[in-house]
Length: 221
Ligand code: HEM
Image (tube, rainbow, N blue to C red; front, top):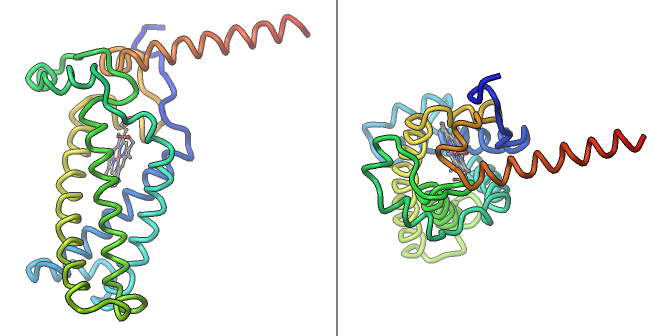
């Protein structure tokens, strides 16, 4: 078997289901949010049946996205602290755009790590301001200027997150073999070696250890 055909597990099924639930919620929230914000996009409420239904569902979908993202947050935060290899990676945009691997990158590169914290910040602002502005349940407990400010920050956080997700999706498509990680759960060893060399070595060492343990176990039977 050639090296290209050998794969490494990057995401378990539960992680992938979690990710795509968050992504689906994000899509629905972006569609309904933009429809409420820009009259030119109002027709998008048709996706939900009626504008009233869109308005009613938006906050509930927001809660599902937030909870789903928090599960992702607690899964991945420990892999998302910047180290000096990430700084090397972040200082070489031209080499990266040319498709070269830069730095001894671990599970995530500097760009992914920055995106992770941007997503986290936006999610927190969105949920807090969204709850304050949720007319059906909470808005009446806050003075009107607070609700207005909450809506202003809500819209800003949403626009920043939408821009961030466009970059996230573009990067996932740009780096060949990445989408497969979130669809099939695996990446080729060649992909890992090139884009995440430190993670590649860690995974190879782990797999080797597991193989040895399995061999000793079978020999002992
Ligand atoms: C159609 C939309 C999306 C696509 C195609 C997509 C694609 C991907 C892919 C391929 C990965 C794996 C990257 C790797 O392992 O190197 C990934 C990871 C991830 N995605 Fe998405 N994604 C989408 C939407 C979203 C949304 C809406 C969110 C949350 C707001 C999100 C949050 C994450 C997180 C937290 C990770 C884990 C990696 C990290 O910490 O950077 N994704 N995505």
